[in-house]
Length: 330
Image 1 (cartoon, rainbow, N blue to C red):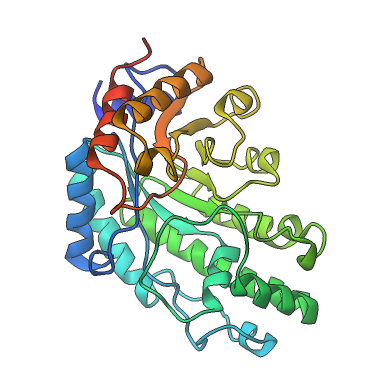
Image 2: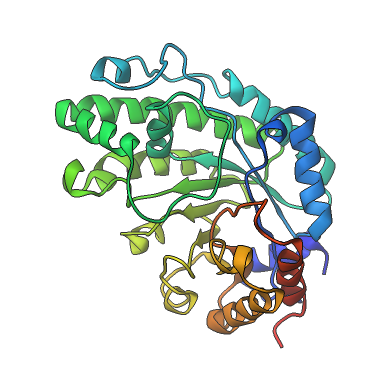
């Protein structure tokens, strides 16, 4: 099968010749925008011969009048913006170039961070340093939002809605630029903490997630990435997406648990935090074969559970992951 046929088979709930395979990591600061970003994506894709490409998005959210969010007054400065506002235009250029270059052969989806993750980033100055997320613990960003929720929950909700409206506009622009879907990153263990009150994710964040996905409803490759340690995996599994991706090895639940409980295809199987950087090529291949066994007949893509440290992972381990996936279902 071609790469596109392989992905389309999984999305159509039929078994391809072998599971599609891909992985992703944050590129260095000098490779997150412009031609350097395009070249980094193409080099990554061509080096490992992946079946689909997740387009990374490390362009900061356009802040408008906001510097950093530290008060309710700052929250009220967050307003809806056009989908190509500020740094978003740079991301759209990358999507447009990559989609035009790859469209005949390699499906693409582009990264979108949900509203809570975006607000969390707005509580600090912009940074061009990005890496794999921590599975456990909180930091000062979480404490800022917890304080704001206590002071004015309605203002937090209004800010999240304004961010969602900007992201909806951005998603529509991404699809116009040629992306075949979005990779929406969500995370509820930052949100549903005792300090934030009961049902905060359900009440304030889930509606915004669904707004963003509704904007992408016409797309053919929408992936939901459940970051961190999911508290409501079953709730996320009901989202209208084509594929679910999460850290099945490091955070759970396992693929075997999920296969009979979710409708979308599953993307995962390889531990991005431990096995990829610290294991052997044989360890990576073994996880691929184990993931195929766990999935049984459920549609499966082989990927890590999340991003990994591109400087720490031996290329041989990624090549081993790809070779194991391409060996098929034997």
